[in-house]
Image 1: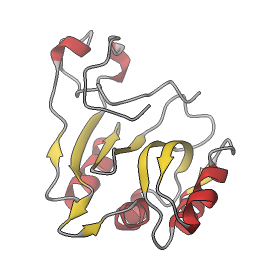
Image 2: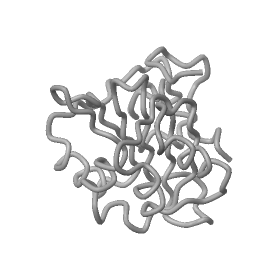
Image 3: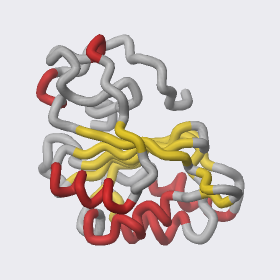
Length: 167
C-alpha cells in the first residue's frame, strides 16, 4: 500500500511528539532526486546510521533487485543503501528507518518516499534537524494535524509515519 498524506486512523502516542519533519519534491526540474543523493547530501548526519528498510515499490531497473534484497536483512548500513541504489535506483513508495544503533528503541531518522513524487524526512534530534534543514533549503515543514496527537498537535503531522511498524 503506497504511503499517503491522508490522516492516520490511529492516534500517535505522545512519546513521539518530539519528532519533526520536512517534505520536499523528489523532482527538481526534470531530474529525480533519489535516495543516493539524499543520503550523500546528508553526509555525516547518516554515515553511522543503521537502517531498517520497508520498500513497497521500486522502479524497474538493475538497482531494483539489489534494493529489494536489502529489505530481507535486519540492519543495513548507509553505504550499502548508497551502493545498492546507485546510480539510478528509484524508490517509488517506501520507508527507511534510521537508528543510532541496534539497541535504540525507535529510529532517530526516517526517510519516506511517497509515490515517487515527494520525500519526507523526520528526525528526533534537533541537531540533526538543523543539519537536514540546512541541506534541503527548499523543503517545507510537515504541517501539524492536532487530530493525530494525544499531545494536541505539539509534535509534527505523523499521518505518514509508520514508526513502530518495522519492529
